[in-house]
Image (cartoon, rainbow, N blue to C red; front, side, top):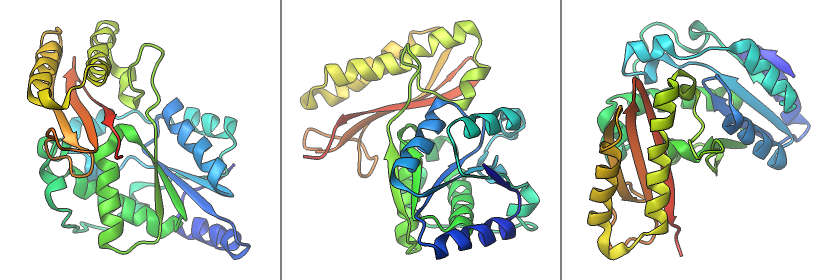
Length: 281
């Protein structure tokens, strides 16, 4: 695996590969890699000739300075994991390589910015679009791969691509879970054993909802789900929403594409999860 820390060197190398007709796949991450990230690499390898993974803990998307401070950065472990799955290229820039001075950025992504994660983390998606735009312009991938766990992020990046007329295809990959159902996350390592057990209520509630879903009882099902989660000690629910998978506005009995999304703080760690209830016909 080749490791680049500067834009110029990476772009020069990728230009040579593209000149030979290589299809470039890209998996942007913030490191602390787990099986979920590695599944994106594997998916990219199936569809592309060369796979680039970036590791960059982006400061502009953190709304809580403490969250940025404690975000795990096990770079050497991450490199070993990428080598084990035969990733071709790692791009691991410093903050000074990605940002110059006090850069200003604003992209009008519409209602998405104020819904769910956007409501609870104001400015988060501006930071996300800012860094993904930079990375896309550096790597110029043909295809970029993101996980379903950050469903709203995928929608935001899709919106950005349309607004800015960028020529990259996005692929959403399924959520990877622990054997007990907990969605894989770099944040899970900060959970205490008790919190880890309490966190299971998120995936359990989502799965129960999917199994017992009735489009005529959406409001009742939502209230029951919220009550179930709120009854677990150490779990502070931020939101539970049964939403239109195309807009993230609340679903109703006529909605064709339905997703349930949840966010909660378990102990001191904020977790998100979701499940697709009904796909488009």
